[in-house]
Length: 161
Image (tube, rainbow, N blue to C red; front, top):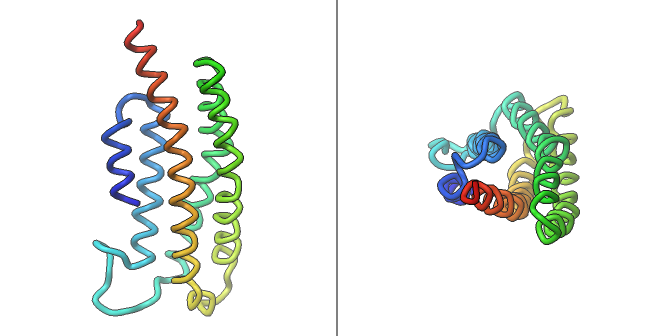
């Protein structure tokens, strides 16, 4: 997922403030994910569970990321797409409902771990992180479809100006 993010940053970075912010927040989320999952370069030489506080910190980033999408970014993307014509608006309207299940999955993960009172829940973390990774990868692909439209139309406007 980090490689795909780096590709997205190379492709769309610097073209639009909204896109840059969105990609930066995705980077923070992915780095924190790698840290709690023990993935390179954050892997540990010994197998151990992350602290519950570290997992809760990740949950905060996760909720912030999905909330930012639904309550800030997507509205701006849809508004921009409406300005760019019917085909852009139609794409946005087709993609957004597909993102909703990924939000539900992220919020379910948050509910399970952010409210946990003891470390016992962490024994399920590996499986839950794996499931979350698959869900978020789907989400990122759908968001990238929106980014592509926004970037292409923004670039077209800049060239016409």
